[in-house]
Length: 258
Image (tube, rainbow, N blue to C red; front, side):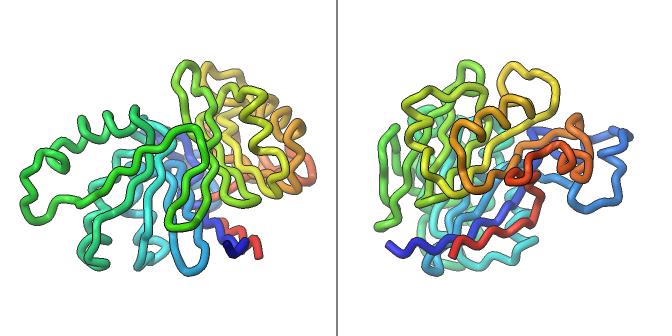
C-alpha cells in the first residue's frame, strides 16, 4: 500500500490530563498551549482515510478541535477509562457516514466495552446509540481493508497493552516493560512514539530514563514522548532534557511521513 502517513497527536497527557483538576502547580498554570494536554490519542491518516487509536474522555473535544468529518476505524490499546471512555461519541460519525464504526481490539477490551457501554450491545437498537462492529485482534498482523497494522504487546505493570506499528511509524503508550521479541517487531521504525510519564520511577509507566533507554535500543530516526504528566515539567523544560533526535510531543502536533 502507499507508504504515505500523516500522524496527528490528538492528546499527549496522562490519565488526569494537564492541567489537572484543582492543581495550581507551575505546569498546570502554564500559559504555554503546549502544556495543555488532553488524554493520549493519535490519528493516523493514509490515502484519505483516518484511523484513531483510543477514544479517551476527551474524544469529542479532540474531534471538534481538528474538525474531523470522516473516521474509518478505532483501534484500542487497552481497557483503562482514559483510553476508551469516549466511545459513545462515534455515533456522530455513524450518523454522518451512514455506517457502523469498525473497532479493533483484543478480548480484554471487548469485555470492558460490553461492560461500560452495555446499552450498545444489549440488542435493543434504539435510535441514537452508537453502532459499532468489533473486530477481535491478537498479537499478529491484521489488515483494515488492506491497511496492515502490526500489534506490539507491552506490559503496563501486569496488564497487557497493545502498541501499533503502521508502516515505518510505531506508537506505544502505557508501557513499563517490552519483551525482546516485541522490540524486534519495532526495529526499523523511522519514527517511534513512546510514553514517558515523568522523571521519577513509576510502577506501570516508563519514566524518562527508561523511555530514553528504550529509544536508544530501538534506534529510530526520531522519537517522541507522550502520555506526559504534570509532574514531568513544562514542555520547554522537558525539551531541554532530551537528545537531539527525541522530542516531547504536544497536542496538535502533526507528523507528515511522505
